[in-house]
Image (cartoon, rainbow, N blue to C red; front, side, top):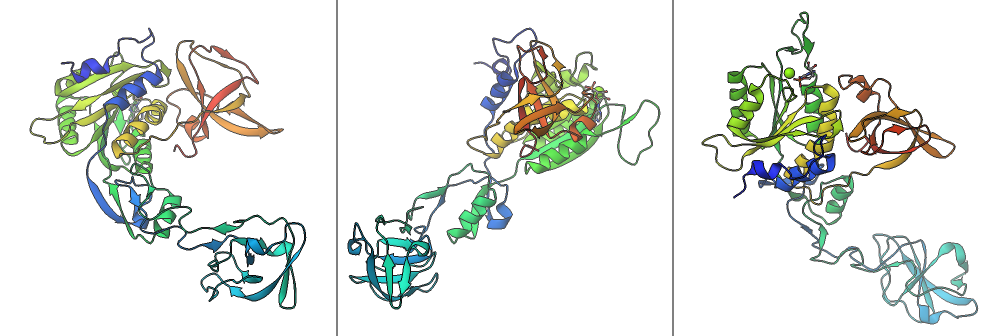
Length: 426
Ligand code: AMP
Ligand code: MG
């Protein structure tokens, strides 16, 4: 039997390491959604993932009704090649139907959303008709069923209105409410533990001695995880000490579905972090053909005595920009899969023209941070200045990633590049 670790090591990878796409696939192939389900009131379910299909308890619309303000008439009464004069017999308002049936030669004044009187099969918009006393004159050329919404035309009773796996947006909250449903079943939130590693890291409120830096990764990670709807267990900064790291990993694995660490996975790093991860679980150390974010660990930890599934481990690099890039490219889709989102949302890359020349390593994917702007009806993108993977300001200034694929080396002004919009992603 192949172990998880074998399956995490693909047979083919270039000298620069796994491609971004390969790494994403490998990761996603192993993950299965968390199983707990809870019932929530509609408003509390915003951004949560539907656990079971929402079945419509009624026909939508519930009655035949008018899509426009106008006149409800019978198609059979209308002359094909001239005007038709019909007798006005009443009015149908939204919420107050016309009592009775439409007879031959009759018309009912009707408002948008009003129930269509039995017998009517056309609504003529008010702009084309004219009334004279108790009669209305209809021009020729009206089509049967025009401006008529039939009962059940959007949804039939018993049919699925929203399928399981959908992450609920405002549109779905409205749709659920339109069916008269007050509660829905959603999957429980994914629980994620996170900690930073590094002897140089200080937490907010601590003085900064020479050579020390403030820990920013826990803040970006907290923000990204919260936006994704995860339950976050922030375990603080852990020193580069085997005993402390082991204790943190065991605690995290015991109570969470996933663990995110930052720092300590690059080449030349104090080796015990890798050793420890390997000793406690099955973890592959990936070299990914990308910049920033080349080193990354992925695997799972199953502490002894823990019932249920193992915790997934994402060992991200330490550099603040690399943390964000690897999170969006790998961890975000992985956590959405754990959350039960199905199908996973597309990750569209849109074309834009490059406003400043860029150079990159030929074999890898590079993620520049960019700003989009419009000029003469075209979208252009310019990089946000210095792109060092420690420069968080380049992320803050950006509204998109410029994705430069393998095979490209020098990209000139005016060339088309793909951008991933941060709006919607972040
Ligand atoms: P490492 O992968 O641990 O060698 O870290 C790479 C770089 O990222 C080093 O310059 C670290 O100081 C920096 N770094 C690591 N963790 C953090 C953090 N939590 N916040 C800010 N910078 C960090
Ligand atoms: Mg470190």
